[in-house]
Length: 292
Image 1 (cartoon, rainbow, N blue to C red):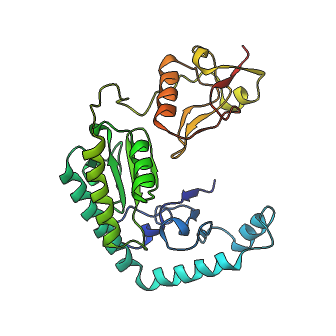
Image 2: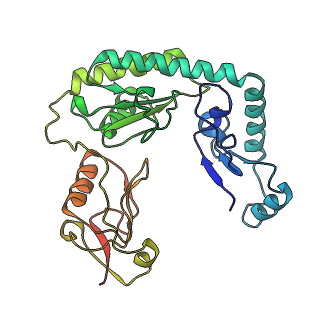
């Protein structure tokens, strides 16, 4: 069986000895690399890397079955410019990116209340490695969910970061960032703490609920279903996904038992401003359950 790696955020793994191992170096047969996320190309442009165990012609043939014949030469050109830039100076570029991220991480931790975590979490088990170019910050200690900090940064400070979830925010430092941008982020987080700090009592203290899988997802999804209010759905088997996006990790998946804890989590995520998706009902007031 061939292995295809989703390496959407891993462009820079190929340009530095202190980076996590790249998919191809780890032995993947193919890797989808989103150059537009961390490599500097235009949005929607990416590479498919292929090793020498596969026929390039056959892979192209399969892609042509579904891919448009009217490719964007604007995107192709941006890919080639970015590829050339990284091929010539990629190690220096990402060394600078890592340096900026490390600087911001240290400054944010000096503020207090925030925790910009790093490679100290690596334990060889639950955390195998850490990408130092990603600036992840835990926010719960200042009494704010990550998605609330995300919204404040965007609306009040004109700073658009990657995402916020229930307990964290993530800023991706890329080839286009400068020291001034990081200074603005650090000072904004400091001011947000000063203006919005509140007691964390009542906040969710965990972000993962161990699911009770009752039925295979495919079977549940295609079973006879009907909709009920989420608030009264405890005990039923879900026929749908419920996901907070980003990051898109399911709170609930088809075939899983709905519990009071899951319902509380969904209500909490909605109240904090998380964008929830996956259900037929866009307002996430109702959920389709499997008819048993």
